[in-house]
Length: 265
Length: 265
Figure 1 (cartoon, rainbow over the protein chains, first blue to last red):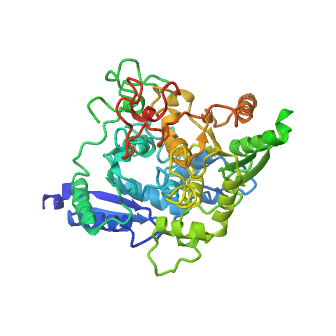
Figure 2 (figure 1 turned 45 degrees about the vertical axis):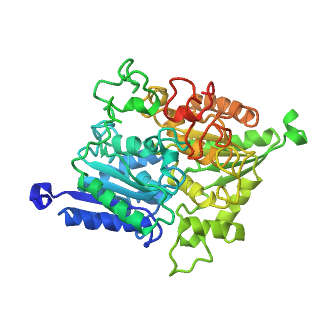
């Protein structure tokens, strides 16, 4: 396969967030790892439950924090990150993200968002000083983590229609906006369209097989598919107050679509 | 004050999610508790960090779960909830929600969402069988928790312009859609417009005093302000696939605004 030639060999971090090792999510993680390695890539996995990942930001994240001191999380992140004084579990995850050419998040949608353990991976790993802040490039496209691809692979109990353009839950793109635009794009990572598996509770075997075939195509396109064309903060579309300039968007565009370049979605 | 007359006395649960007891968030929680009690209401507080709230859903949530059994979270919730076989920390929070006439969430916005410890409160407390599921009224307006008010009080480091109609982060209403519509409205609670304190890092004392005055007005209106007029699933606006019917919305409406009744926002 051409993918095994050196210049095509990429480094991929898969972050997986399900408590059950025999779950659909665990199966999709295992499938992705095998498929990507088969294509010649290097893959590392952060299985958050297996790692007993601590979800909550607190003073224990900062070995230098004095117990009687007021904990200002932003300031503590800003001090501890460049000093290499974050707790070792956080530092290890930052090293994996820095190492990677792409990050894949595998999770079940719970309450229209990521499970708490994965949110805790965002909160604790993407520190001020690592993923954003004055010492790194500005957010939204340039970003501290620019040059990386990002793919959400999500299982959803509900049916697809509820997440369609007129679906009551909101479009999947809107529901995942805090992750796709707020985490990935903000930090400079290029998010692909999410891979979503709907009706995922008690999934029949033949649907799982079909899902794997679909997912394989998305994994094959990880470095070649067109990312979601979010607008760049520094591309001339926004004013100094981070507001989209008048008349930049296509007529009739509103809400979160404002921040996608026309023709993009 | 008229609020102290028996029929006006209400029960309010404040859920607070910040690791530092001297933080702005802790101050806002303390202010809300004092203000609401001063108005004659009963108030209970879930200070998640003080409680050392476990953020992560896992087998320990289910005392009846056998270690060698596959953990299906939805099925486990559905079995354990009516049987009263959830872990005691979850059962205690469900009792508080059931007791309440209103729930207030106090949190700092981290990565365009709630902190992981609060997401873990959603994931673990709002079980299938308690907050949704076939045994309780259908979601979106009727809902298991109908009759309750819900208020988000959020501190945000960034400036307000970035969350305005054309702000790059997305409108605050869109960013909080997973909480306002996905958690509250889905379970039948009536969400009010969020109370947001922007530019919250290193807030000067005079801005904190102004914020308390503003917040007091919102607390005074907790049971009288108009909730966000989200559409009801059973109100005739949606088809059986949970899609908004054609021509129901005002011309030019798109995306998440589709699910708000015209004139509402």
